[in-house]
Image (cartoon, rainbow, N blue to C red):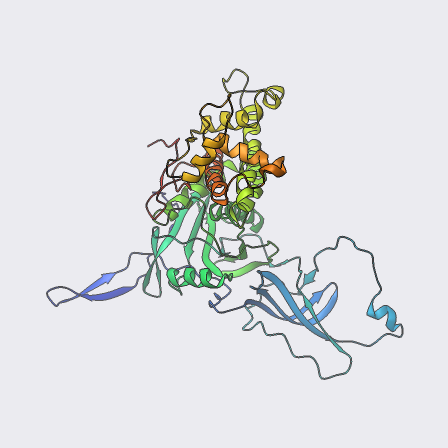
Length: 491
């Protein structure tokens, strides 16, 4: 268990229960109070989170309006505004001219205040003035804005879109009700706390998202210094960017930390309004999370991943491979689930065998040796996966992959394993021949993809220094509590 230098007080709630003998007994909670945020949690049916209402400058022009995070079709920061205008003499120029295609910047927005404004009560656009010379605008591509003073903060709270669902974790008190799922850990000199929103049962929230595919806030979090000291918002945001990246990896889809708010002595003194990430809809299963151990897995992932982020090579390679991971996990075709992990594993193989290992290590390769045709893609990956300890055999319950294995007729491969099958199928995609177009069934491709993504997930977890449980896609049973420890686990 992590020992915190600064801890939260108990909620102080008490409830009375009836004992079997019929007597009343008072039970005092010993859980921390649920985190609170400057901006209200959106209801499940909400389509936006109102942030600000009043005057703002959009691209140096003053408007009266509202700023909000709209949740559909994907979370984004949007501004609606109105203003009175005097039509110029050159009406053609006022209406605009045709311009060639070019890169454009996000719209710049600013508000003239030194404090964090109170949250808007509604995201309804303002009414247009009852004059002829009036225009309204909608700016859906905002660059984001910081408001208030970002120095000398003692904590930052934030929201997380489309997070995870688990059955473990610490309990939190939300208005006298116990809610499970809290993560409380330290990341270097920082304390991180993330918990499911407590106003809605987690089962209701996850069911709503799976049925509708709509985005919403699922978790609220907080970061602060472990020694209780003051800090700048920029330092906290560096940590939260790592947390955001690792959460997306665990989910297999892009998520986002939004609406961070900094406090000083309990008062909101800084906030960031920004939502430029292309957040994925909350559809699809998580790659390696086991609902029975989700909080424990994520705690280990955050701690190991944060430590790895201090290693420039490892973090750069992880971020590069993450794009392949998202593409392979989130709505990819069965053939791409085979192809993408192979390319990503080559990134990790080269970084470890060539760039990271020292001369004299039995697994060390020079650039020329790694690139030699005699080694090939299979050799590049096998050397890495052997170090990781990945089981590369074909699972007996993968009947379709067994057929692919039997179909590989190569004197050099008397007993092809799962890696051989994956790379052979991958080569049929990368170097297609029409005669091979329908050689294998969709189910065969799918089972090869399960093997490929499991190898890839394990390599990524090993690369991050993760040492906990994982739920492999090649397991015969993938229900809750079916996960096993990673091959390199040290009890």
